[in-house]
Image 1: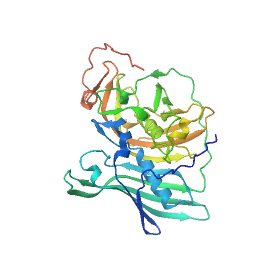
Image 2: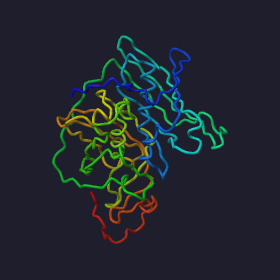
Image 3: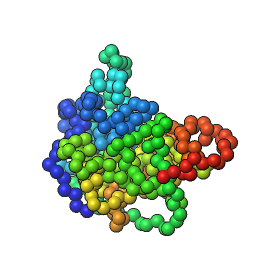
Image 4: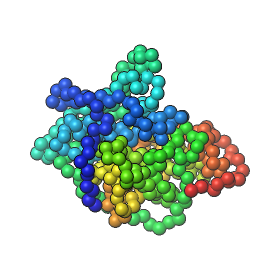
Length: 340
């Protein structure tokens, strides 16, 4: 697979003002403003909210700026502590990306950078209520080039159950639309969950727009992360989950969503096993791959929790207590039997 990158300011979407207190530290500031119009398609309880996987983009941009002669090949120990929501006093104080070089090996042509994403909590009147609240954190791995892509072994043939994506159905706490509809054809396999990447960035995207300037495929990562929670609980409910951490992300090539959407081959997403959020320490793996099995990227060990559930019998969203307290199920009169 060959991807030709256009001459665009890649990796600078979230970096407005950059300062370097010393040779090992970089601080970038970014005001959240009208450029975040894309977040109106990512609503949490009706409020535009930055998806957790965009922490990977924030961290990657800061690390790449600090170590510009290497490329971002992965991230480790991502934590999502306080999701960024627009409105209120959000636009009154800049977001701060603090990157610190943990170590560099010039002989091996590699480096490790720790990144924190911080922001002040400011009241609508402009009063600073909390300074330097940490929203996200991650460790970024850089190298001279991306590692060779592994290949995914085909799963054995088995009956697959198509399911609806609850994040695209009205009435839930999380509602995604527009470019965040990044998956299609979701189906449950005995070994996990499969879906197709919907290539949500149109090929006629204006050069220099949001997703054209990303270093990472944030929309693909967001879709793959959602698959990690897909399952049928009590043969009826699909979790709507919020992530809290990702242990590892590996990138096997320099492709963002705009570049992947321009490919003339399908991209399949796979997550295994099903229902990882039910365990205390889940062990999960999610991959995006080409038809020949070459892996574009992978996510390992997602941690999170259900915020609610989608009822495949009634087509409605329900509270966690309805499912997790073991209440008796209503008679199985399905409105849309696990709708596609």
